[in-house]
Length: 59
Image 1 (cartoon, rainbow, N blue to C red):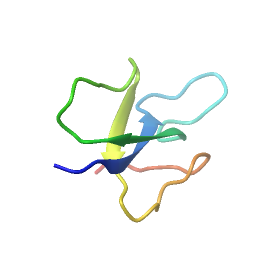
Image 2 (image 1 turned 45 degrees about the horizontal axis):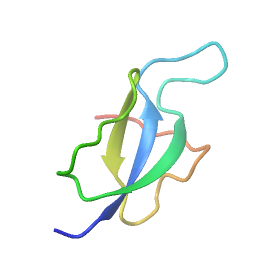
Image 3 (image 1 turned 90 degrees about the vertical axis):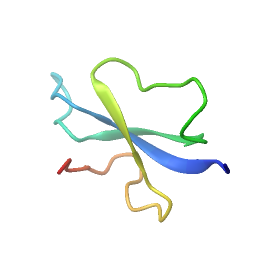
């Protein structure tokens, strides 16, 4: 499996950022040992629709 781009976003608002705020981009194969930090989630973003500073709305 090849590595893909993932946008890492906040799952809950903080005192400075809204829920959904994209704060990091990682290149990950989707299977190796990695997980987003607590309070965050990752979404595959192969088309670069969610740059850092954008907002991702989870469905």
